[in-house]
Image (cartoon, rainbow, N blue to C red):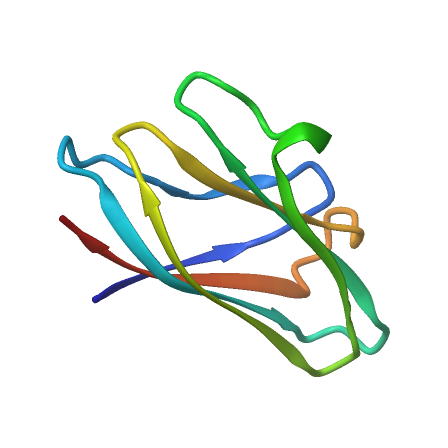
Length: 104
């Protein structure tokens, strides 16, 4: 398994893009809120060539201050497909996302 780490904001960030022709298996997404107030975390899975939208939203959760949320999944992504995440914290660097994955 490999890891990728990202800082999130309210405009959203592609936290993982499958760059392997054979695809990738995503094991988990961990969102950590280091702020002093609760923050919303939204996760999308978008096909290649598409952007994040309400149609591809996987979840939205409120993460309490100083806490983490683990989305334990066994998701397979094809080449170019991506995970996109955002939070309600504006431009502050208080919410982080870590993705564990394995290229197939």
